[in-house]
Length: 390
Image 1 (cartoon, rainbow, N blue to C red):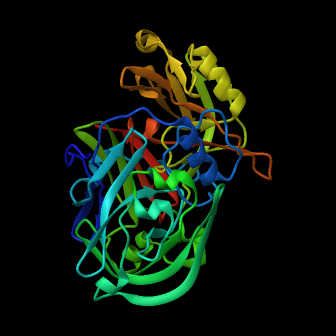
Image 2 (image 1 turned 180 degrees about the horizontal axis):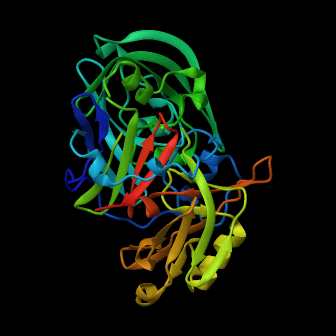
């Protein structure tokens, strides 16, 4: 149940100002480690780990070179993105942040995850017979006067199976921005329980068009192409309370250089390591051995349901965790990387081994970090910028 439409916004830099979309929140609830594990393994195509608290979903990621660390424009302040058009986001379990979009005429409303780890828009089809579709809103092209048939087959592979469907074209509205002819996928088959029990209907990918299935133009690119935006930029501020879901500003899989990690006084220098800043990921996924080490150091113990739990009384005294992106440090306190859910304190660290052909590795930095830092994604500069969230 959505408690309120929240205070913060999802801004896209648009013609005549910034277009914002509000984030919404619903009450926190105990998570299901088995389903969380399924989400993470589906998204990144790796074997499930003991604890994977990820409630996002999307396409396979793709590595991109980090921008030059000498580019001062990589790091912005929030004052540079005032004004604009807002789109509300909803927060589920501090793990799923989604917004409402409208497709068709008259509009059909869908809850979608805004996912920087994938590039396609898809929603359940009225022709879908999967269990997941019966539990969510379905798009009906016959009820829309602006619907145009495309018919191309569409398929995204996940760890538990394939999301299958076909491509259609219709009007898409996000906040007060309207794309007149947006191609998107109607899902006729959704795999596994992960999609069935998600609080979202579909996915709206904000990644680069290079990883778009069927080479479909992503909605953000459509906004740029139709000159709805003054600049190809969007950003996120993710809230952490029921009254503050957060905000996102207006791209693929956004990755920056992770050169160092510090936990208290202990410092680990990293080589050939990237950090994917992923709005479709709930927590922090890192190599399994490091996740186990961190969970041991914070005194986390594995519970019967697979979660790593911490004594809540010790959370305020836990060391800071600091990420160094390029040459700049970004710290999280114990109250940031430990989530309190109905009186239980749960570690945000989960093991996931993503090894690249060149010997490098990727950490996935999700909403635990995004709740603390306002994040700006610049498609023109291929850059991600951070500032402390207000």
